[in-house]
Length: 166
Image 1: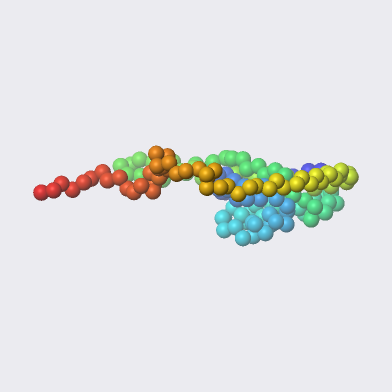
Image 2 (image 1 turned 45 degrees about the horizontal axis):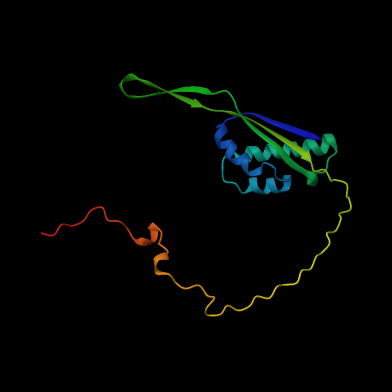
């Protein structure tokens, strides 16, 4: 079962809120609360309050266990922009947009799948083949024409500006 909680008209830009909500998406509620408590972003406190609100409504209204919940979805949408003006040089005006955001958190209960018996794989033991030691005649000989070239980073810096001899 899903539990939704919404926060509208938060006076923080949606891009900044998405940075915080990306940290908790898909996590268990207890772990998400710990992450939000120690996040230094301004958006962390309103998101934590919203998460606590969603958890409280799940426990009180739907009789769910809080330890069994995880965050299935976090939506951060753009709200209306407050338009302000700032005076600039030579009598001009510069538009300032104060952005707002709407946040929706969806919690779900973790479902425990019914246990089924797993078939055990049969262990197959194969004997290890003995390798015979290579004699001097069987070892490959070193060929000087097959030298390994070093990558460019190890060859040294190529000089672009050289000093002229006076």
